[in-house]
Image 1: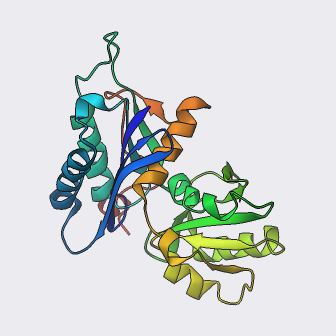
Image 2: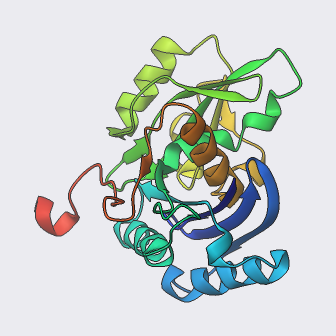
Length: 242
């Protein structure tokens, strides 16, 4: 299965084309330009490198949230535009997948346990402002990832207490754009540390792997182009009034 996967949920723009879990081409860019400026050129580079076209894609995937409201909308809209009207040889619409950005971040850490009997607790964190994080907890072992909590918007104090109470005897690795903030807030928790630098931020291959494994299994994220939609864990600030 050939997959086009993108992530625009934080400052990093990430994109990849894979065949199943095998990367064919990947790009990642963190800079001052907006995702609306950077993402389409990155995707075009992927097609040029692989010699593929949008008609070759068998699954269109994106991180559908949580994250930056604008970034999430850009990614979902771009994938909807690329997938719209495309069908397979039987005339069936090409499926889409709107994966959890937090789930994809946790999958960055899969290689740390792929060839060992070790297991770690992945704690992806995104800065949700006002001392809150977008977060979920996952167990990573044998190259697989198991969800231990739902995606949520949680205060730094609440997350600190949860890590101290439930995971004090486990190795916990932080990842995501909120890692620096979380590492500072949880500095006294000796078992909690940032993931290796190369695994901290969004990765198009991880989005593709998340979508592919889900497609073969639970199909929690699989949808069609019409129903693919952003996932917000709280309303925008203008609606909250805080």
